[in-house]
Image 1: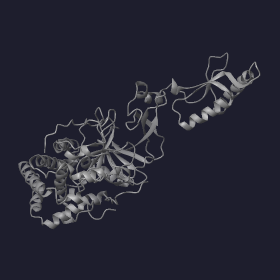
Image 2: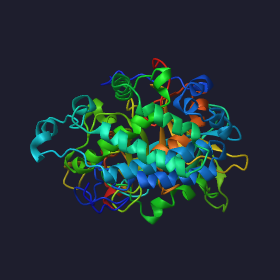
Image 3: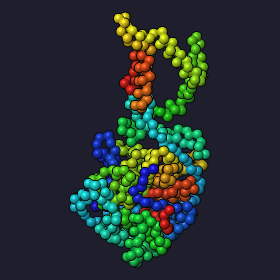
Image 4: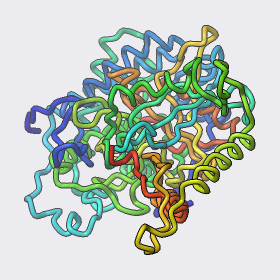
Length: 319
Length: 197
């Protein structure tokens, strides 16, 4: 992966005074995510072990992204898709082309070494990694199918699914990094889906920076491409009338979570919203996992979790 | 509600959903998710689009309001910021617009009609009905007295030049149309709009 120097929060706009409509994932994406996991670990102490594990996972993703080379494509490879507004990196089309199996192997080895160096506390998770190594090919394929189809993962494979999801993220982020500059904002009913790979967002970020201060972007759950969507609109059904931004505050009346959930009374979907003016180093995946407890409370309020985070896997058929 | 491109399903999360999630199956206690949020209270905020009313530019604003406990509780405005999606202002606000929240919360903000009668120095609160009636009475008295139907050479002019009208800047096209109809039908000529100021 070429070392493109990208300004963290301030990519160039297409025209003066307008925010960029699609923003490529940064090359240090997974490294900054790992730092965010590590920071959240000190704030959400109950969740600390899980967050610490995810910090290791994100660091391994960063290493894998740097060390492995994905396939390269000729510039015109995606021309037809780009001309017609189709997401060029649709997983259904590229599963056999992108080298996610190699990325998964590298990720597993890097993570295993890191967990081993962290003493005994991740012994159970190291056992999972050896399970993953001996997983039959068809089981692996079915996990991948469940992730990209946003289906439940069968119980016997559910524990390793997030590791497979992490490898897919690496493979797709690598390609998205080069491709996103050629993309435009998705149109019509596809506005809620990634213009790069067609997958749903993990969350929204209200951004910082000279060219996109306070502008909202959806962040792809798979390839981490960011794309523009107007503020104060449901990212699932685009309704603007019945939105409730649900956050949490402590007994002292101060903000307790780094996020709010943009919850829609029209379609009952709830997608988390990070605000970089609240916390500049927020990461949608890390903050989503650290605030899993909020999703449970939202369900009691009649909303369902609509963010797509392949670092988590759930049971059964979705409702 | 728009038709969805995908037929996405969502997972029921709840306590049971977390207990069978990958988090639990990887060997992490799923109860941690619930206990991490237990000490906290949920807050409900709304964000509403609007237009700054204070000059002719008409910058877009986002108004944050927060209800109390109950769902239909009275909403308090807690924050106002520029609307980054607004084509005119792209999220920018001048110092006046940036201070909108202070206008809203100002203790000296006028919240109802008041009148200071001739010869007094006291403002007296009156009802909207009374305010409208008094204004209408003044307008009619002045128009009855000063309306000019024909000029010195007998040509019909139907003009009324002793009263002027300054319309607001943050009106829609429709409100502007109605304002114009109302003002010109009275024969008023001194007519301007703050959008030109």
